[in-house]
Amino acid sequence: MVDNTTIVPIAYINNSTSVPPWLNKGDNAWQMIAATLVGLQSVPGLVILYGSIVKKKWAVNSAFMALYAFAAVIICWVTWAYKMSFGKQLLPFWGKAGPALGQDFLLSQSEIPESVHRNHLLLKQMYPMAAMVWYQGMFAAITMILLAGSLLGRMNIRAWMMFVPLWLTFSYTVGAFSLWGGGVLFRWGVLDYSGGYVIHVSSGIAGLTAAYWMQEEDER
Image (cartoon, rainbow, N blue to C red; front, side, top):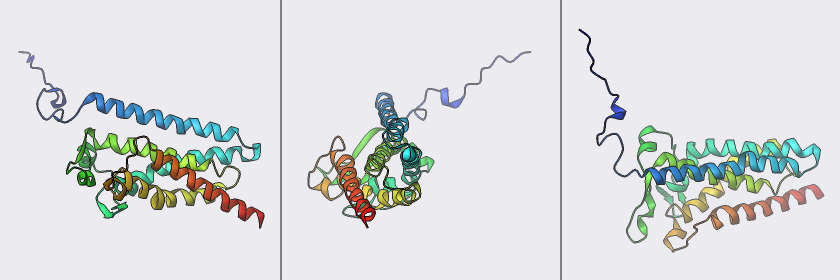
């Protein structure tokens, strides 16, 4: 006798464990689309731009500066920098370093732990931490690549490889935690919806400063 019993995988069973009650599929989908659009501005967007606006002898070096910055930032971001920007407080302007790679962490509801200081409310999002980590990682990466635009034709790739993780760790994470992660500027009521301070101002000032010192070195 043939057994016609159908075995349904647990993922397809309609129960409370399949989809968390806090998950909004629309919010999650838009978060990932937005992250992808920002990523495409970086790679291949700025990689092609930087490789095409400099002299031929600097073309490969300039393109690889952007490509390396994108890859290195993502590795540093999930290894320690995300939690320095959006994790528990270490200092009023800095979060505690730590990996953002655990399955339980990435599948939990997205939240910004230190945001409770404003109106006594903890900021939570209707998508998982994995989407938040990737989304914010794209902004960290493009900030680093924007900074690279000030150093095209001025810095070789070996020096850039050391500069990227250092600047991300000691500059970008400070601004991100202070404004977005619940740090001192967040508590003062400073708002930065579109990354004007964390991304554009920080990369612009850092790029101007780095270009100035590179120019000083060239003149010696």
